[in-house]
Structures are given as C-alpha cells and as structure tokens.
Length: 273
Image (cartoon, rainbow, N blue to C red; front, side, top):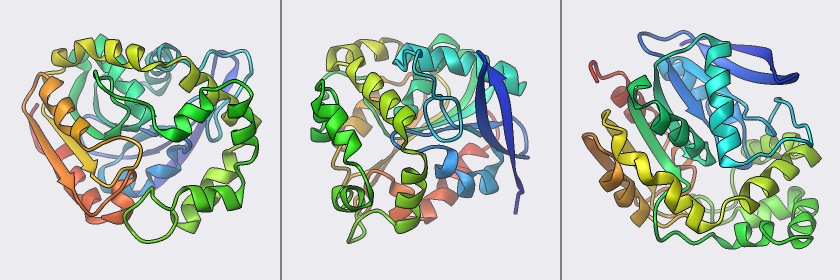
C-alpha cells in the first residue's frame, strides 16, 4: 500500500494543492472533473503512485475571481504545474473536465506515455450539453442553480449519476459540498459558459497526434455523456486504443465497479509505450 503525501505550492501568487504517491517509472497524472477535486483519486494513487492536483478553482487550490477558468486556462496551468512538480513525461488519466489534460497532451504528444480516458467531456463533433450544463450556461439562472446546490439538491440531483441505486455515495457528496464554495461555483460557471459545443468539437482536432497506447473507459449509464462518445474517442486517437464499456456503471464508473481501479492500474503499468 503506497502512502499518499499532500503538497501545497505557489503558481501565479495562488496556492496549488496536490497529492502524490511514489510509483515506478513515468508518473501517472490524474486529472479530476466537475464538481470534484483530487479527492477522486486516492484509491488510484495507492494502486499506481503518481500525482493528482486540485485544478484552480477547485478543492484546496486557489480560486481567485480574476481568473478565466477556460479550457485554455487549464491547459496553460498544467504546463506550469508540471514544471512546479518537476515532472516531464506522464501517463495521463482524465475524467470528465479533467479532459483539459488532452488539450495539454495535444500540444506535447511526446510527453504522454500512456493515456486513460474515463467518461470525459467530448472534444468531438456531435455532443450536446446535458441539462445541468444548459442551466449553468445561462446568466442568472446558473448562479441561482449553483446557489441552491446544498445537501438536498445534491442528493436528489445525483440519483441518476451512478448505476448503483440511490444518489452518489454520502462520502462523495460530503467531499463535494466541503469545497463547493463561491469560488468553485464561479469556476464551474465560467468553464461551461466559455465552452459551446462548437468549441469542444474544434478543440479535439489534434487527438490523432496522440499515438501512445490508450484505454477508453465508459460507464454506459452516464446521464451526462452518451456512451457512443467512448467509441468516438477511440476512433479519434492516433495510437493503439482499447475501449471498455461498462453496462453496470455511471459517470464515475469506478464507484459502481471498484474492480476497475485494478484494471486501469494494470494498463498503466504495462511496460513500454
């Protein structure tokens, strides 16, 4: 069992929090989505080692109001964060909006040894935002929706997020609400409002340049991103890619299928590129 360390550094006069665990070979970079943080990744870190930051605006990292919180902002952040952490080449794991790591990877395909895409926002043609995103993209309505997101709304609103009956696990909801302050709400709204579907489709134009081995994992009962985008990602990526559809899992598939952690770890730890 690997021990997990916690770190806080400074970038652009703002704190950056990340977790790390010792591993073998090229470190794994884990990138979380909305509305979570590196709280998603401890079980993965103990399995593989690696690093998992709280992206700006989320978790324990800085949440200043003068930041853009766009896709490009996060890709630029990753460039500086990896320099801060002393990491050059990575094995990359992205989930949901952690897909901003793909934007960084398309800039530096030679720095990605292996890639795992898990129920990730599609940088692909044909996607349409889910109903929550459509609310968040509306001025004033989005602020109201965010303001009302407390224990009751999160419990009711996540009943379809997983395949296991009931809302998302209580521990998951507690972690989300612990960090869902005004700064995180602002970051989420700016990210969605700066990301129309046409921009998402254009952003993935360089996915074919990612020629490393890849694993695309999809909880097919995801209410936010249809399962067909797993196959679209696999087709768009330029390297040897395996697709794993899980009919009994939702948007956070490892919570429905804990055995998935070992399967992803085995893929990441396969020798060679």
